[in-house]
Length: 323
Ligand code: CP
Image (tube, rainbow, N blue to C red; front, side, top):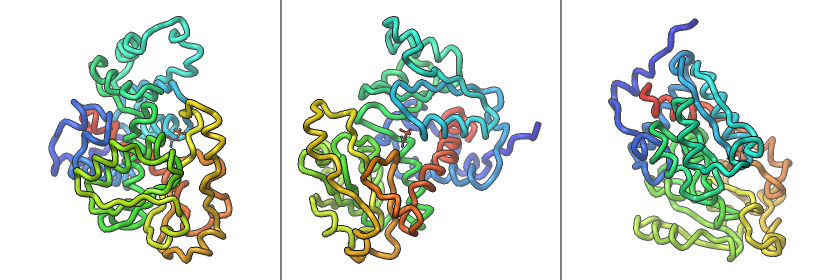
């Protein structure tokens, strides 16, 4: 067994602050700029060095009550890379939820079997409820259309890696800005930095008014448009999102807007975008992002997904008091 490598520079500089919401990672709103930068710097340490053994003997419980590929597997990969183990709830259809067990009871039970819980749930606020009753750290892996804070940390980590900085950038969001929880979390996170935000969506999928109010109260510069080609030349980062079919109360509404914005190589060429433009997407994509972009220098979405591992290593180590 290799001895664990401590995350020394982070421990020395920052001490042991309580992370996020009472030691849990529930919403990006619970993090100020310094807190965000501390996570990003810990993730960089995780990526630069092997920290195998740091979480030896610890168990991550994963409870995913909505589909996931990246978040679930990168959490598992992160825990295994730190020498910990993963206890996965598996298909919710095969659990006692089907017998009517409440989320509160299930959280209490799983908390007795592990040291930290990663929870994805369709209800907004489910992760905060879980954090109140688990008696151990809870990490929100997505709660309905509300928040996806670990995605936001990996989005910020990616922006900093591919652009060298976060401050000073113009970040454009396109697609489903109403239901996209990755958008909501990242929009809030960018208010901690000096960024201009541009929102492009069909009118009925615009950023919720409460979030726009938050931007105004923070004095953040933003604009709204439905003309993607018109704003593309100004952007440093384009954050594309899938239309979240599963969140539409009415399928006819979804049919009306699906395929509203498709980004492909021809569009970028016709708009004369900056050479330094980078296109991000939380994935999965459906048809909004053409595969003909994949081998262009603009595309960073697969790198973005890979960055989920060091970022989740950092968050697991931090909530468990090891970084
Ligand atoms: N980005 C993201 O949350 O992907 P998954 O739904 O596959 O976890």
